Each structure stands twice: as C-alpha cells, then as structure tokens.
Image (cartoon, rainbow, N blue to C red; front, side, top):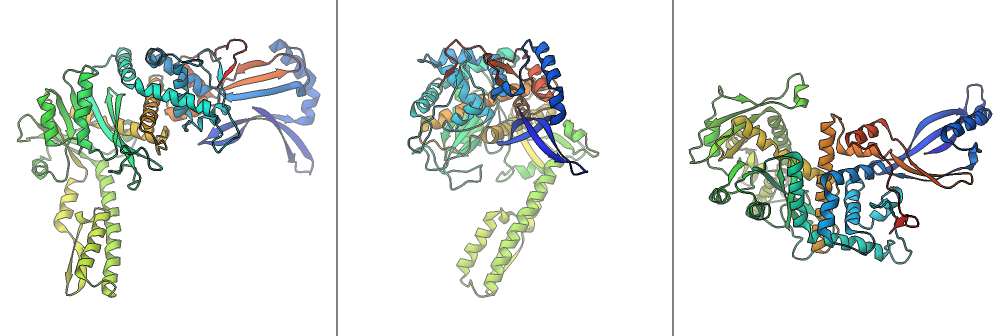
Length: 582
C-alpha cells in the first residue's frame, strides 16, 4: 500500500490536490491498482497533521514524526503462502516429507518442496520463473527465513545455476520418494476423513510438450488437448472418496485400457486394497479387461461405449417409458424455472453377472443436439465446396473425388450423418437416414454396466457422476496448476513436475473442503485471490529500527483465514543474522 496524490479540477476551474491510499494487486497475472481510501484534500490534511500525529502516536506507542519520515521498505504478498502452510500442516505433509525426502545441507528438502508446491498452486511457473515469484511474495521456510532469488547477469538464463540446481535436486528427491509419499498421504486422509476404500474412480488424460520432449517417452498419441502434432504423455489419476491418492505417467502413445490393469495391481500391492469396485468412463475398459477385473474378485461400474457396441440398440429398445426413476438434480438446476430432468431405469442385460442401467438426461441431450447440428453444418460446408469443385471440372478422377469426400466426412464425424455417390461424373451428397436416426436415438442417453448387486439404481448413477470430479481435477491440474505445456526434456523431470502439480491439487482439494465446511461460497482460486490482499509489510519510522507486521486483508480473505482456523498471521521469527536463504 502507498499514498498517491491526484489533481482534480473543480467546476469553478480551481485545481485541488487529493490524497488517496492505493494498493497494488494481481488480477489474472496482471498488476493493477485500486483505491482503498480517499483521505481528502491535501491542503486540509496538512492542517490536521499535528493532531493525526498525536493520535497515531498515542495508539501505536510511538513518538510523533513527520509524515515524510515513514518509509515502507517492503509489502510482499503473504496470505496465500500462509494458507498453504496451514493446509500442509493439516495434511501432515511436513512430517511425511521430512520422513521420506531425507536430509539436505542448508535448507531441508521439505521446505524446498513446499516452495515448489506453493508456487504451482499460487503462481504456476517453471523453476526459472519461480525466482521472479520469490521477489513479489513473502515465501519462507519453517524457521522464517525468506527465500530470495539468486540472479546473475551472465548468459541467457539469469537465475544462478546453484539455485536452479537446488530446485532440480529437490525434484529428484520428490520423485524418488513418490510411492512412499502417496501411501503415507493415503493413510493420513483415511484417518482424517474416515472413508472406506471400496469405490475407486479412475480416468486418464494427456498433457503435451513444447519441443521434442524426452526421447522414447514423449510420443504422439490421442490428444485430449487438441494438439495432435505435439508429443505428449499420458497421466492416469486414481481417486477414492473424492481424494486423488495416486497417479501414473505413461508414454504418450499408451492405449487407454492398457493402463487399467497396472493401476489396479498397484492398489492391491502398494495400498493393500482387498476387494475394490473399479469405476471408469466409456472406452476405459474392454470386455477382456472386465473379465480380468472379475477374475481378481473385484467389482466394476463402468460406462458403456455407445458406438461399436452390438448390444446397445437392444438395451435402448428395452426401455419402458413408464418405468423411469427420477434422479436428484443439483442446486444450480433447482434454481431454474424448468430444471432439466435426469432419469434412469434398469433393464435386463442378458449377460450373467452384469446389471445395465440406462440414463436419460435432458441437459446432455441439449448439449449433444447442439454438437450434432454444428458438426452437420461444418460437414455440409466442406461437401458443398467439393461439389462445386467437381461441377467446375477442377476435380474429375473418381478416386480423387472419393478421397476428398472421405476427408470431409472424417473431419467432424460427418460420416454419421451424410453419404455420397458419383453419378454420371457429378458428385452428390445426402443425409444418411439410418445413421442420423441412430445418432438421434442415443442423444441424451448413456448406459452404465455394473457387477454390484447391492447398489440401487440411483446409487449407481450417483457414483458414475462422481467421475466428473476427476474431470474437474484434470482441468485444475492442466489449467489452473499449469501442467501444460511441459518444457522439460528429461523423463524424470517430467514425472517430478507432474507429481508437484498432483500434490498442489491435493492441497487445493483440502482448501475446497474447508471452504465447503465453513459454508463459504468461494472457489479455491477466488479464495487465493482474496488471500493475496494479506501482506507482509516492513516499515521504518524516522531513525527507529525496522518494524514488521501483517495487514488484515479484505473481508473475503478474513473469512478464508477463519475457515482455516488461522488466528496468528505472523510468519515465524528467523534466527538473528539468518533472515534470508537462497
């Protein structure tokens, strides 16, 4: 915070100078200013200055001083770091990392790991960019020693190699201890929230590289980031009771369903799971994989592929429109005048040991209809252009016309809606009546298959919908926590980079849980923005020693601090002569 004077011209032409209290803050990565208080006209404040000095001196226990003797030396962002420190403590991460990372000369690996996780959560940046963040935020170790960037002017990279080496060494230690850290965190979460590890949700995503990436690890594959030309890696996340307890990183061309067995085997061997119920999305499991899950005496609850499934038409045809069971809707839907319906019913599967539930969703139908219409319009545009090229004689050979038509139909799944032929040298396209009817028939409807006989229809639907938790986690992992794109060129660094983001996601999940428990209607991202108004301030008044304090922050920040049960906002007092570390 600082004082700013502004000249304002009045209606009679007189120019008055006003004094305002201004604060700098970050909004979407940009530094902006906002006025906290308008103190009034400068000439009137000068007359009041002696009285203000006496009043402030009595309240603060200091001698009156001239206003120009007050020097604000530093006002660093402190609130987000304070919150992450508290969440680290609640998760038991301090002790877990101390026990698994080993000792280091100077700053412990645990404190450096905290900095990496906090940076990923608060202001995601590379290990190079982290140095700039250390200048704006008050980041300290458990002794209160502030981390400072170590700059040098040689070469293109301005961060000193010794500091970069310390961060990369910490990444190496984290990756080496990954399996032990995940296991210890799982036991900690189970004790904190008393959940039963029977339902295991699993899904995968991809994250891409800028550049070549690690050789034989970063590969081209099915890109979920719409970056088919960039090499990538596959990330699989295991969630239990809403908590991400483990993740796996595979080569970018790994097939989705081939990862399932490895993830389940890890849960049995490392986490000691007995029987579990595997919950996965469509395409995650094949028939062979389901048989393997059952052979291991596990259960499953999975979405069924809607296309290339020979039994889907039979199952949808068996739906009885009079036997739908209404599913509860969320709060957002309840607030609408006509909330969208979600209905479900169980139908005979005609497969031993398998139950089948058909779900009908108005919201999903509206979305899929809109997507189909867009796809049809785009395909039609391409086919019309092709038709004009053929009519103009620019394309004559049938094999070339056919190849162009197939490319147009493949682009936006147009083959589902259109067909074509060549008649007497002219190109024609027309709606595929059978395909269009099939697509309209499955819009808004999906099928869930499960081996669990004890679950009701509504419970099956509710459990399957929890997969959206993983999808939200992926969005946070890749967007909010900035996992993509990856610039590392070494496989171990890539895996460590993703592990840091996974730990940050876990911390963010706990923050979300604490906000919900306190009925604070703020997202974790918005909570962090509010906490950024809590500053660590260093001032010097006249010839007195430096003084340090913490500002209270905005009202939302105070609510978040209360939710985290934080009353002492001051950082630890560092040992004398050891106020900073690199």
